[in-house]
Image (tube, rainbow, N blue to C red):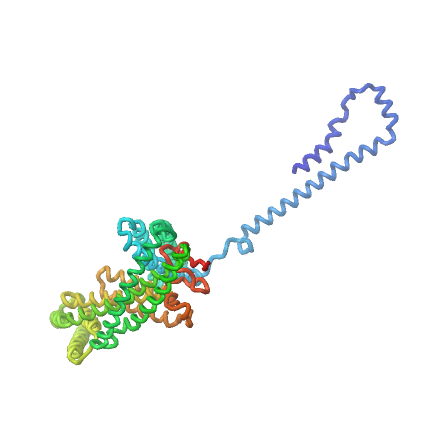
Length: 500
């Protein structure tokens, strides 16, 4: 536009000067004119051509620029064009993203809880309060995400847009859980000082815990032999293989603690910190496995003592039902069938108790459910039986998921979270069912997953179990860094530095 204006001014300028009086004397003008008269017309024509060409070029360039701006604007605003807004992810893509976010957030929470157990042993509650608070906040966000996912799988909400928003909510909640842990990871590192003076104390604490756990593992092995003699195979099925897995984790921890000591003696603090964290993760999981054996043994003893009282209490609950009493009216046929079922369950349990080894926890489960079906409400010994069974199922599922989290998918984790909620709100029967379903799904995931390092041994003892348990993050060919307190951004910060 500026060029067009200049060209137009150049064309108009001769017209503006026409008719003006020449300040130079007429005689001089006449003399010069007489000398130059023959070429006067040619000079005037040349003077007009140049500005005309400039004006036309300026107009052409302006038009070309206008056309380019118009096309660019259309490409940005016209739907369906290449440069339109980014495509919206498909429902399947969004669902996959939500599933991955749930697994990642749950792993971060579990790992952070594990490392925090070491920190609290050394520094106490007061100094670790911010870390505990962040962990609790992350657990709350994760629980909310699991609840949203659970409703989503049940078909709630039904609207397509609302279901997409629910998945976005799952991803957002999980991201917030990770952010809270990431924010406190520097504070934990500052407190532990694994790359400095805190390394020696941390190594000593881990080695002490390791030695204590070694003795408990041997005791758990003897306990498992006793359980085999007193109860059926189904009674001890939940902890079959736990002692062997605990020993595998301890072998892995032994190697890593030795590596950490050597690196510390060589002044390689970064490598020592990574090896120490791997050892700590293995020790925590070994303790979970040993605790699983100890806990099941204690519950089986308690259940065996409770069975006689549960049988008597069940009879007391059945008596009003025979007279038609109950919270929910039942037809005559329904009442008769449920009473017959309850009588059959009680008779079967009495026979099992006198026939030899049996599963007292399963006996309590059957007694409690038979009474529950009569709609008379749990009270007394049947209620205590239902609570003991539910606590055992939730604890067993929690232990299994914790030490196999490298292979467990989101469905089992969400069911386990819901089971814990039901147990906390006083619904033991629902908690028991959900926990058992979560355990079954988790076991199926592990069987389908297999071992990513089937030949691990020799220079890498216990590596396969460490990867399966999530002690190592499996991000690299050598199984990757150890998992640490933190979210997705910081949990792998203690990478193994190469040997000098």
